[in-house]
Amino acid sequence: MFQICFSSKADFQGNMPAQEVRLLLKRGVEAKNYEELAKTEKLKPLEVELRRLEDLSESIVQAFGYMKKREEEMRSTNESTNSRVLYFSMFSMLCLIGLATWQVLYLRKFFKSKKLIE
Image (cartoon, rainbow, N blue to C red; front, side):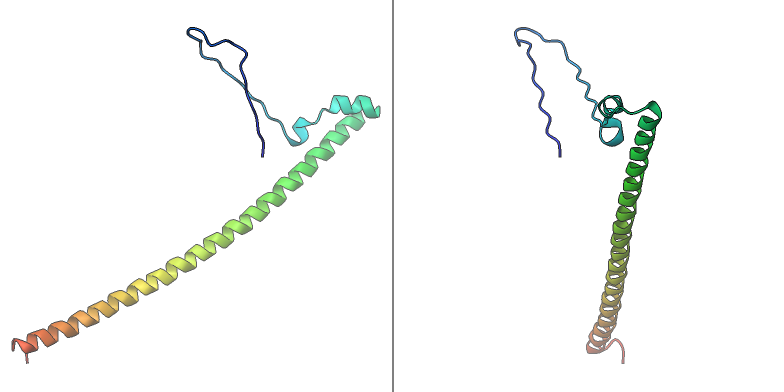
């Protein structure tokens, strides 16, 4: 979770023109300053590139792990939703069949009492 605060030092007297604020957030490999790392650890350009590629491959592996976890969660949600739909459909059909049977029996009894059928 990130919290970012903006403040303006302009005084608000009169009409202010609209201001545009651009915000660039970097995380992971793109946030690391490899030039600074090369200076502090005295690395050669090839070593810096290898370090960058190593970090990049690690972030890709983490992203794939996250995607696999999300896929499993979504599959589980999908399967539980499918089973709920099946059970609700079966319940609806049983209610429909029960009401149809009751209606036939009730109408037969009604018509017998009115002596319209034997």
